[in-house]
Length: 590
Image 1 (cartoon, rainbow, N blue to C red):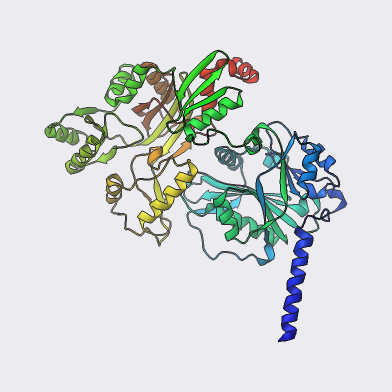
Image 2 (image 1 turned 90 degrees about the horizontal axis):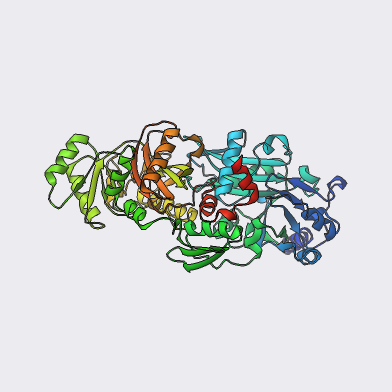
């Protein structure tokens, strides 16, 4: 027994010595001579392996070669204070932690994820979808042809998560085999660019991507997997620690460039702004426009450039008149104004206190109705696809809690299309889909809604969540479900008819697919209202078809969540045309 304890103690001591040798702040790791001063082009920038550089001056010189709009990363830096001393005005220590997973101790999960599968990136469509996710998450995109023409197929592995039903790319992860990249004799590997679409309806996508990458590198004989994660990314850190990753004392150094500014310039004073105001403020700052936040909670700020100063509330500026705001505020008035301009609108009536017979006749005429308050926003008080008089009466009562005047219109089947019009040009178009949950065979719909709401809140800065109210219960009841129903594995259920973002809806960019008739209708509606910035909502069967019905106009459309379209850029162009970069100005003339 004493001999056994002695062997165990020696093994533990040897393990600690190995960790100190491998992970301590020691001289560089061993690598093949061909791997000296190693850097690999990853498309979004170069990954520079600091352990292959003999002196900090050479590493600094490599970092100075960073291309425009790229994000080069010096990884595995062991003496960051020495490296920073070579160029303190150019370099900064990234506020991230390095984590390592010993692949020999990794154990696969027995849980099978349903609703999506993980595979290698294989097509140009995959590459374009990955770039959309990168831009949505504020990451640097990759030239689509990079994945075929300039990358090392042996060193780089890009995986995607694909929806099993729709084929939509829901997430991605990027891995590098260090042995194949620079002859690393320790057989290391690293994980980069883990990103999941904020519109993803399934849980567990990030974990599945990480596990697949781990298992691929383990099968190749890699000894460990490293990654860099922001120190305050609690959600990601919790995932990595769950999988067995441990902190190691390596550091990441980057160049001071516009992409990295938020990491070295200190916290922004506007951190309490909502995403719709923040996206505009960020674009203004990028152009050197002075920003004064006058009321962060309400989204109010003032932009000043040269001799012009403009007060804004998110995308509502002084350029939008009070008359235009009044027209958008009253849905009945909006309908009349755009209808006179030739825009197609659904049949509609406005009801008073005692008009049950007219409502009943309207229901018999159309078979299915929509009830909404004449004034309101963010989808509150809107009930859709009402087929019985009892449903209509209940919806009217709910709508009247928000506005005395209630509108009833025919229910038009189709999909909700939002077109963002700025300076009478359509700059973004997106399909807005109603919130749905996907069953796991164990959880009730109420529990699935709570989880999906947490994911939507995290993805939109708290702007989107699914209310659990009478409209939710009615929507579920129409398909024979309830909040207590345990949804079987893989089955999805729409939990609200409205596709509004604030009530849990998701946004999917279709700007390049919109039929010219729909673009013309949106511009005509904006001109009829005489509003320079607006979100026009149409009900369509498909964005590629000309059939539509006008639903409403929003005088303060959210410019966030429309990546990769340049909504904030076009808004600032409108306010301050002299701030448009010269290259962009010349491109517009061509």
